[in-house]
Image (cartoon, rainbow over all chains, first blue to last red; front, side):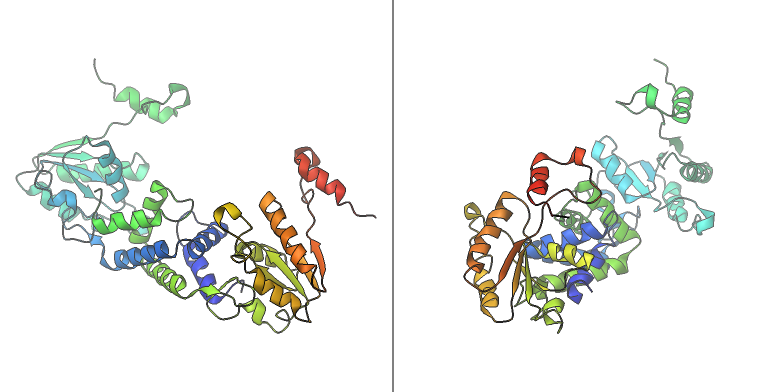
Amino acid sequence: MKFSPLVDELIESLRCLPGVGPKSAQRMAFQLLERNRKVGQKLATALERSMSEVGHCQACRTFTEQDLCPICSSPKRGTAGTICVVETPADVLAIEAGGHFMGRYFVLLGHLSPLDGVGPEELGLALLEKHLSSEDVTELILATNPTVEGDATAHFIADIARRHNVVISRIAHGVPVGGELEYVDSTTLALSFNGRIPL
Amino acid sequence: MKFSPLVDELIESLRCLPGVGPKSAQRMAFQLLERNRKVGQKLATALERSMSEVGHCQACRTFTEQDLCPICSSPKRGTAGTICVVETPADVLAIEAGGHFMGRYFVLLGHLSPLDGVGPEELGLALLEKHLSSEDVTELILATNPTVEGDATAHFIADIARRHNVVISRIAHGVPVGGELEYVDSTTLALSFNGRIPL
């Protein structure tokens, strides 16, 4: 025991956060105890409430404490004809940061991974198919990660979607803006050649 | 609004932790929500309890939720004749990690800084003097940081301690073990020459 049990427990608990080692946890605990007790209390309340109240949106499966997330419940976007399929809620944030996509999302909360027991059921594909079979959906954009698992998941979903009357597309993969050809890996370069666009 | 209000609040609250920016806060929130709800609850409880219950040891001023910290209340160390003065509770941890010091501590919780309104009263020097005037204290080790403020604080405390019958010393400053002379700054090198020990 280095400190009193309660302080030790706080330091130990802070280590559960990703990217926080023993030294950072200690620094966080001391900073909160020394200077920011009110902020610490606020964090405790936010954590407590989030952990017990936050569930998943009934339409798109992203995190929300309501039945529908703000995007799905917005009159403009909730009934948009385009659905963008992503792996995680963080991907929704990344796309929303751009502000160019005005459709709605469907969050898989993972990717197909038979070895880990993640199949179509865990990804909520029945719910996605329900959306696809409704009249108002016209386009499905597959924005899973460009990894082996992400690609496999995209192809699996595309096979399902072909049974319905929707346009299916996969986001483009290629050289990122600001990147230099010299430093881009060969697979990405090959994809960027295959996906070239006529000018 | 990017997410539901509660998720946004959790991300915002996590940003109050030192070294946590918007992306890390988002990653922490999602990891807790996706995989570690129980751990999140435990962290919330630890935070809540620590922020309201942890105070300062009545003898050495380090963090504890009891009247006396484990070191001060240990029969071996609580009455030791040597007191080591440090600036923060983290310094106590650093010295305890070595395991070579078997006396007790006195934590200033800062250093003299008249511009910030930190004077002898804020550092609890009256309490330290009370310890010094008791019969059983024989040695005072000043282990404040080797900064301008830390040195000034050490000298100020040494002046107070001279009125009492104790041996006063300052920890040695010099080339750290494993360090290379080539990369040590000139002030540290000068201190290591001044503090040379006859062999």
